[in-house]
Length: 474
Ligand SMILES: *Cc1c(COP(=O)(O)O)cnc(C)c1O
Image 1 (tube, rainbow, N blue to C red):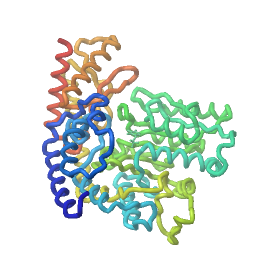
Image 2 (image 1 turned 180 degrees about the vertical axis):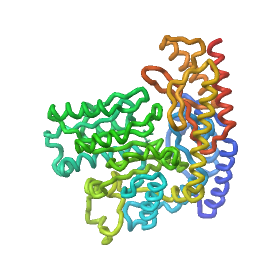
Image 3 (image 1 turned 90 degrees about the horizontal axis):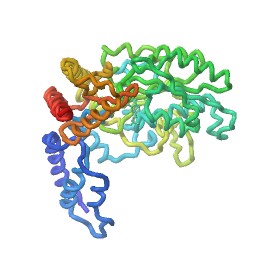
Image 4 (image 1 turned 60 degrees about the vertical axis):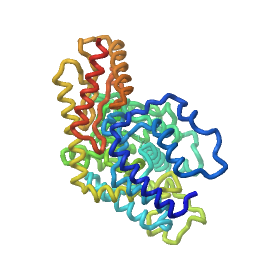
């Protein structure tokens, strides 16, 4: 066991290790190369009875754990969406874990509650979101979407389902597009609405929800005796960063008194840029909105910003007041345990404060613009050669493409070639990409969003992709 002086010594050493990690991060394979079970097999079967030396724990960390890590902060991590960090955010997380406060209610750390309120306001205003919205930090967008659907359900049912459970009379329907994230499916299940009552509306050529189809379906459902409960629209779908037409969807929701939740988990960060101000149009019609600073705003996972128009409905859905949690100031403060699912909460606002102050909004904007520009450069290269086909290019920093040097039209063959290419690229450990399917076509996704990505990393990615692509054809 460490005493406080040993803690200090090991702590200094650890910061140096972290420094070395970031200095040398490009030497690690981006995607972990281990096979299933490999790490588990290397671990002792039982916890030690006797204390072990800290140095041997650290040694095992390097030898056993690190090989099984996929390096999300590697600048050649182009997969999924990022979970990016920054040095400011890491330092803030160190403080958060040192203080180790449990911030369930205001009184359990007033600074955490009040900083959270202010950080949510800073972010809201930086993004140009409606000024009347109230924000709260959730762990993930999945949780925020669940919280949103539960609030929609309770508000519509006059808070009776919380009290009595489902009566069997409710026939709620939730709508999203065919492209929306699996977290919507999950939320619909957990909220008791059921898979069969989640309707996936078709999309246009840009993978955006077609509002006319939505309206027609709502009309049909009403005629059939269902209650349209909520629409989940998306700014920046996970597959290809498509953008649903928020204004039109908002008008339809208003017309039919349907709850509107907006999932901007990844692309919401782009709203700090005025060149995306058109995406703010129609947001005032939304009931709730989520985006993840832990994705593209350099704030360590987890940190999800959830906004609502009707704070009372949210709190009424989640507030339970047992005697042991009453504090005497409850009517004057935000007790964030009432704003979501968990009781216990980490002090997550601190890292946002560190990041927003140390970068400044201008610094954040510069980073986002750099990523978008680097992605543009990559896309230009794809356009220029004859070997690659661009399947979709969004407005942000993601391009979906595939290798097709011989104008092959057989989809199966193209899928085989490209999935083999993807495996080769990822096995190299030099860069990490993932794939999707667009309209049935297998596509490689290339994203530029890593905090410390520079032009040279794009050159490297381009070189690696081409190297393995030419191997495939040979
Ligand atoms: C990543 C993502 C989610 C899920 O985010 P979590 O915070 O991991 O729950 C939901 N929706 C979209 C559009 C996403 O990109």
